[in-house]
Amino acid sequence: MRTSRQLVEAVANAVLYEGYLLYPYRRSAVKNQVRWTFGLVHPRGWSEATGGTEPWDLEAGCLLRTEACCRLQVSVRFLHLLQRSGPEGSWQEAIERTVEARDLELRELLQRPVELPIRAPAAVHEQDGVRREWRALEGVVEVEARPLPVADGVGLRVRVANTTVLEDAGTLRRDQVLPFTLASAHAVLWVESGAFLSAADPPPELRAAADALPRRGWWPVLVGEPGTGDCLLLSPIILEDHPRVAEESPGDLFDATEIDELLTLRILTLSEAEKEELRRGDERARRLLERTESLTPTELMRLHGAVRELRIRRGWER
Image (tube, rainbow, N blue to C red; front, side, top):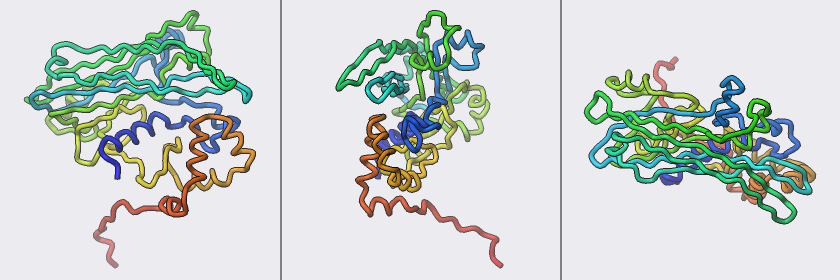
């Protein structure tokens, strides 16, 4: 059984790596030629030069009820794409990046918004004949709060923007801009002495306030055990409140539907040539293959199905 923190982390990681690499997990697979399809925050100059159809910022507002000494933790996470090159050819991988404020006092936040800088310098790493190179990124995370017309109600807004400066931005193709882009960007918010409220089903007295909050590219989702409100995910894909990753799942499969049994069986039936290509490719794919091949019969049987809940339906009697 996962703890509340582990449950939140599992959901956030599923969002972070959704679509990172799809079955059959090989670089040569057609559907792995186009990735990074949501949660993208492009450099502002390129976004504006291309008509604004590709965003340079994402933001969302949420509601919370507070008590005295309410404190917040805000973490914005994204993938920073890098170019890997070596004997096996060239391939885009990714590094996880996190920008966070661990101890924000709501009283101070109501008086003055907070800005967190995003700075990821360019770098090159070479090892065992493999070269990995990533470009510099710059941006900002904004967090602000305002009181609502309810005694203990507060509206919170979080925004992430990519301020990386590109020369001749208007002449660049999308694939040339991706190394300067925040991919799969999302935010995880924690609150102490307070509780986040559902965006899908807010209290009646706060529905108008909820509808007025900004939502551009992010959707607020309660995460953690059902009935709790201490954690909120600002997700680039719409999810229902309190989503879960199946306890039976042996690890990330980078697939939204998490059809673990089917994908696991298909991985085990890959040819030796396909497995060898997989091993020589992405490091996360190699670990996925090793984990799958090491599953015991008992672990495989756990993937075969589970009943989460039973409901009695009335009115079906003959």
